[in-house]
Amino acid sequence: MSVIIGYVFLGDNGFNTDKYEVQIENLKKDLSKKDSLLNIKDLRIDTLRVQIAEKNEELEIQDTKLNQIKDDTREKINAVNEYNDSDIARYFSERYRNIPGS
Image (cartoon, rainbow, N blue to C red):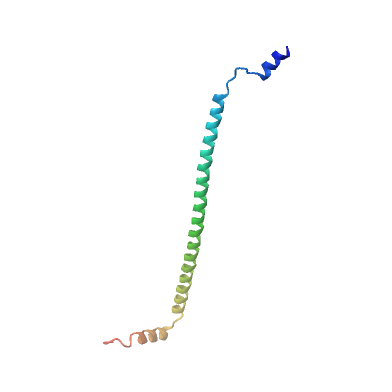
């Protein structure tokens, strides 16, 4: 009797696992492919982040230059606004003094 019970539990029960093992291997291959694609996408994301950081630095530099130009222009406008009539007359007479026919 114990031989029969042992054969039923431990012996060949007629269940074929080959097709399941093939499916498991195929799933593992698909998972590996998807992991590789994910790694490629992660690398692309990291590359884009670096490029964005570089562009942001360039923008900050340009913003600084633009602000400096605005400040310089504002100073010049304010300086001109402070000229009185005699300062303006002196400026133009000195500027155009060497032009023939004037």
